[in-house]
Amino acid sequence: MDLSIKERMISLRSTYDIVAPNGTYKAEKKIFSLFPNLKIMDGAGQEAVNLKGGFALFSQKYDFVFADGRTYHYKTEQRLKPVYLAEGNGEQYRLYRHRGVNFSVYKGDTQVAAITKNRLTIGSGNEYQVKISSDADPLVVTAMVLAFNSSKEDDKKGAINVDIGYMGMEAKPWDSNWQPS
Image (cartoon, rainbow, N blue to C red; front, side, top):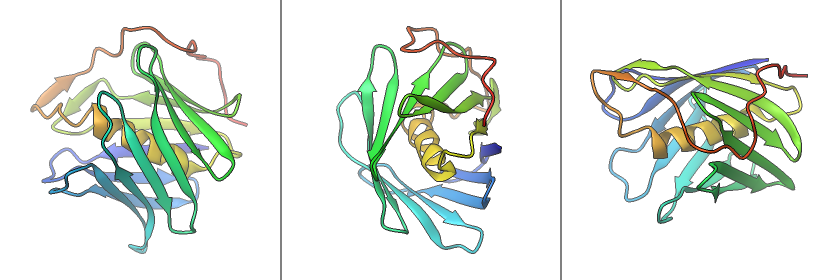
C-alpha cells in the first residue's frame, strides 16, 4: 500500500494533504501554541488524531490522541542514532532515520513502512512517500512522520531548499529491497 504526505508549499501555518489507503486526510498545525499541536482531520472534517506536543529539551515528545480513544506516547528514544518511539495500545512503533532522505518504521521487530522524503522543496513543501504494510496503522505512521517533520523540518522555510540528507550514524541500515506485505 502507498501513503503520501505533502506539506503545502505556501501556507500561514503548516498544512498537509494526506492520501492514505483508507482515505484522504488533512492536517494543520496550530499557529499560536506554546507547544506544537497538530490535528489530522478525515475527509468529512472530523478530527481523527490530535498530536499534542510537550516540553522536551533536545528531543521530541508528543501524545497522539485518536478519536477512537487510543493514545500513543511519542518520544525521541535515541539522539545520536536517531530513533523515535510511539508506544500505546499494547504496541510499539519505531521510526528510524537513515542516511540520505530515508526512514523506516518498525512495529515491534518487524518493518512495516519505508519512507522517502523529497530533496528539493519550494517553500515549505516537504513530501513523504510511504510504502506501508497492511498490518501497520496508517494513521500512527502518519502521526510519526508529522511529529518528526514538525519538530525537525519546520525551520526550513526558504523559497527553495535542497536537502542533502542525514549524514550521521544509523541505528539500523536502510533496506532498499524492503517491500510491504
